[in-house]
Image (cartoon, rainbow, N blue to C red; front, side):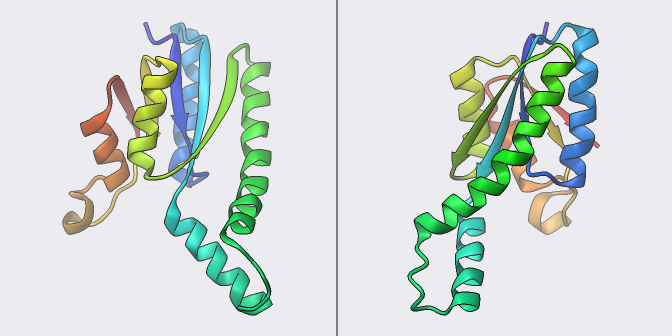
Length: 151
């Protein structure tokens, strides 16, 4: 039924809970997992600001440098997950995009023709995210496929 799934991760505790469910989906017939990580502008800006504070604003640290450093750290962690999934018998791949997480996750699902997105639940305040994290809420609203939210 859900042979190809998207597993978006931000490496949070909730994303790790979702990862445990992803591994269990092998028994339900899942054959392929696309591990997705979205680098959001605010994370790039935060990293860039920190680097400029550490090295000085005239150090020549560029936005491109900030993105490169973030991606170096991200790819190592994603590769570990990919290898683990492959050892469990999944076909696994990595997709890293830059942009708004909810939009990029849904676009990834369209691009790879996934049948399911598996997301970790993120609770936020009522005013900010209506008891469901805003990224999760937007994925549910925008997704072209079914969404499994793991709490």
